[in-house]
Image 1 (cartoon, rainbow, N blue to C red):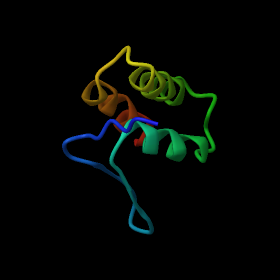
Image 2 (tube, helix red, strand yellow):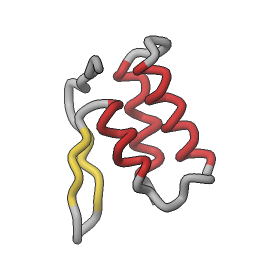
Image 3 (spheres, rainbow, N blue to C red):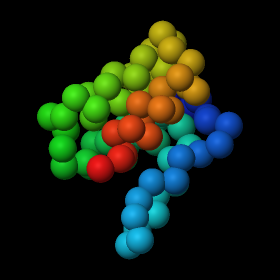
Length: 72
């Protein structure tokens, strides 16, 4: 599998936990474990990461969708 790295990784979490996500592939792994998979922002992040893996989108363009999905 080809890994599309972000120039600067996302740091997700709160005061209890910190998760560093450095690529759309890693973001998919994080998204799989998120409880609110039916929300629109989760689905947008999932589709954006899949688009990167399939070559339809640049990796940096998917990053904001993942960051938005991580916001509460």
